[in-house]
Image 1 (cartoon, each protein chain N blue to C red):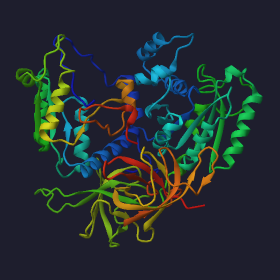
Image 2: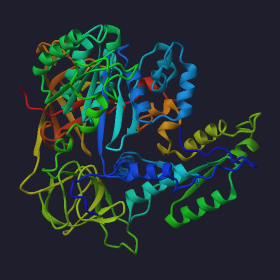
Image 3: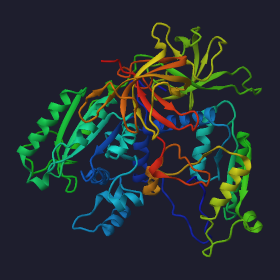
Image 4: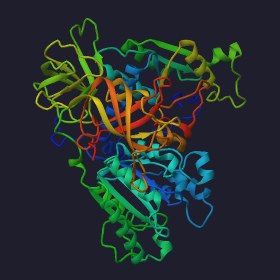
Amino acid sequence: MADIPSAAQPGITPPVIDVHSPVAEHAVEIATARKDILRIATAGSVDDGKSTLIGRLLYDSKAIFEDQYEAVERASKGDYVDLALLTDGLRAEREQGITIDVAYRYFSTPRRTFILADTPGHVQYTRNMVTGASTADLAIVLVDARKGMLEQSRRHAFLASLLRVPHLVVAVNKMDLVGWSEEIFEAIRDEFSAFASKLNVPDLTVVPISALHGDNVVSHSTNTPWYEGTTLLHHLEHVHVASDRNLVDPRFPVQYVIRPQSDAHHDYRGYAGTVASGVLRPGDEVQVLPSGLTTTIAGIDGPRGPVDEAFPPMSVTIRLDDDVDVSRGDLICRPANAPTATQDIDALVCWMADEPLRPRQRIAIKHTTRTVRAVVKELTYRLDVNTLHRDSEAGELGLNDIGRVRLRATQPLFVDDYMRNRATGRFILIDEATNATVGAGMLTPAS
Amino acid sequence: MTTPDYRLSQLETLEAESIHVIREVVAELERPVLLFSGGKDSIVMLELARKAFAPARIPFPVMHVDTGLNFPDVLEFRDKRVAELGVQLIVASVPDAIAAGTVKEEPNGSRNRIQTPVLLDAVEEHGFTALFGGARRDEDKARAKERLFSFRDEFGQWDPKNQRP
């Protein structure tokens, strides 16, 4: 619910918070340090222990307050503290013991800040997983050591590779229930590696853990002397992500035009937006699409005044030297490094609506800040996410289906290959009648 | 600002994301309003809105659902800040709604629950299509399930099982 203050209670003195206390200073340090942020998506089948693992990460990284932990301790039914109770927030989830919707959690260690999207694993929630993983740097797929690789595990790994999540971690959970068997772990690891080699997984790590007891989550377990790899948290802290970002191709989709029209800023005209990729600096020669006009950047204003450079994911306002006509949906790039302008879109689409996608259907495409109308020309094939089989006979894409779709837009879009540029290589599909988001697409070359 | 390694802090990242969302809402929706009480969460929201459109004025009004139980200093600050930024303030008053009989005082005297219908009535009266509000994700477990855009039906209800992707 929105921010509405609670009633002031006369006679109660609020606690005095010492902003110079070590605790407060530590909090400020965490929030203002220039640390990497790692966006994580988790996926697992029902009962794989995903919520427990997340509770473990939150608890062991001290993201949980003592009183929250004590409340969970009291609510736990068995012999152990049920850490899943820390993460399953909705009543329906606690009752059914499953995760229903994407939940976002924040935790932090001295090295990194983590934003974790906890996504449900059931097949009917593929769209939620796509939502959670679309911005992730790393995906954790949980596997129950007793059950081995299930169809769902394959689907999760496949979706992660489809969304080009650069790093994949397979956490083989419940190792305590298989007697910490090295053989079982190796069998799962080998099976997964074989499957992953068929996908586009640049970096795969497999870790044997017990989320319930904490083995190999934060510290090395004495139960797995045969395991020489890193603990899960160590991997999350050290995985190399700096090179995953695109700082090469400047792309600035114009979101909003700022014209104060006040006496103090009479001639101010700024183009507000978020840097999608690349680095932009005052003095840079730039091109505005679709007009194709070139000019130079006069200045860039950030939230705290002018800046020398702008890079992703900064939200800034760009001022241009010449009075060129720029509006929302235009794109600012470099003249020698422009995206492809095209009305023909060939993309992998995850369909998210009950009503299926069919050829000849009319639909709106929202790509960066640009929304255009389009018609579905062809459903090239529907993909079976479990077997990777391509069904070219399919006549429609149903809820949670993924397939290759060709669309023809009424106006050109300025696109990049999703593999090179996730921000300008993806789009959403909107039903114009209901304004609902009905699909998500990735511009990947046909193979 | 020099950042040779092209990294932002956690706060700068969240600030950039918030500014992006605020601009997007203003570009896409007809009549947004920001909930501003003068309290700490809404001060953050107002400041983010200021940054999103500077040096121009914030292009939407702010609204306060006043329970009638606020500290006078907070209300004074609210009015002062709104005047400084040159934005329009709309006050939806819970005591007025009690006097008009649209809501009833709760036995425990808390007006947390009864401010909701007052808010919804004000939204309808002014025809607002989007509300900006600040909430802390860690305040309640259900809040971690909230998306950036929390769609409500015509009765102001939230369906976490069918959120928009």
